[in-house]
Length: 528
Ligand code: G4P
Image (cartoon, rainbow, N blue to C red; front, side, top):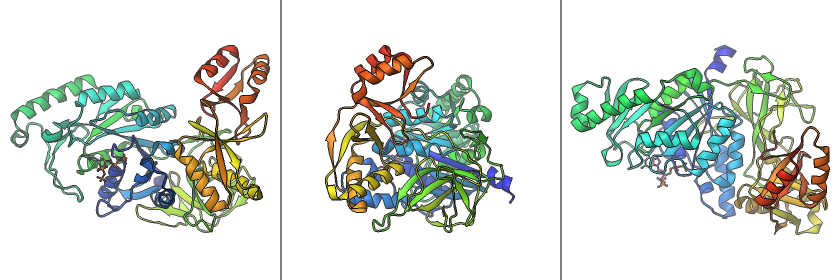
């Protein structure tokens, strides 16, 4: 297979959902249908991350598991599928945002009974900001839930998506009888006895086949006829270009637990989902079929063994091929590095690989060279865009609890921040360090890891911050900026990149500051 064919057959995507909607179950069932695993239950989920546990050993154990499930790759219908795992727990949402910089499309899972939930809204917003093509999978149709049309409305209203039903359910819950596949125009009837293995359930090719009426009953049949008519009248027909540009969003219905509707999703996904897409760098747009290699680090994982502080940096390949033992330019450090044992990931294992293509993820052993967002290339000095920091939700001063270990503490904090565990802000007026996290759980993780991996101890002190805003002076705004800096001196900090951040103590003071200094812009993310 030549280079261009290798690129064209790759599908790199993420599955996102509010916790408990069925992301893990769907992932597992895709692997099952893809032939990557033989029975359900083989892939351990990131479940622990969903519960508000502060059992550190569990967190540690979990980190090991999530290395294994970070990228799940398999071949289906000659396509190389790379599923990038995203943590379910909201405290790790920033990890998910970063993973979304490495996907070419996403599948959003929604619980039929709960509809669109908070975490789904946030994640979809990030996808829409980046025009990532989105497919929606409405799950748990074997349970009573909301009416299909109401749900489609909700998805349109709350998520701002333009839905195009690709399948339509026949009943739900106790009365769930099957799914009409609008993509292939056939009907699969539901049998709920096959939860762990795949069986071919009955497939009917024709809506007018009398077998259908016999199977689902006359009233369900006439309701289906009416609903399909409505679907065809109300919703646009599928247009792949519109889907790829983020203007249309195909919707599937099913029950992941019961293996139902999953194959339809997968079959359509491999047909319509995009191959690796071009990516913008600060200098220019890089397209996958360029000969020269380029890629970026979107995730760093500390390894399980605390004695060896080695880490695995996950690199998404944007263009060219990544070859083992070839020196590549680490753009930020301006030095060449070569990798003797790059890992490729499969559904059930990782192994050393000689060559990888655009769309693939390679795992590189790292002793502290990488941080999130770093670019690797064949030699060109480019910097990929699109890995912004978002304002953390929780802020605390971090103090050194063991003066003899200041060096270890600083090194530990530095490396944990490079991994993206949390964000560090240094207050301008007194140099104190403030850690910002998306969830309270990370404070425990940081404290635990500093102690166990770096031999350093820290304490925290509360700090009242509502939001971190990245500050930008607009044209002609020098006077405003000077005034702002003077009055808010105590609230100004630098992030790890040295960008100026305003740590607003309340929504009110942020609003007041915004109106008082209109020529200073306050951004919710570090990239603007
Ligand atoms: P998540 O990764 O999005 O957080 O969700 P996960 O797949 O772990 O699923 C959450 C719960 O929903 C699980 O039940 C799972 O079995 C169930 N589930 C997933 N898909 C379906 C479906 O199609 N129908 C029904 N009825 N349930 C579904 P649990 O009791 O929390 O866990 P478990 O003991 O089953 O593992």
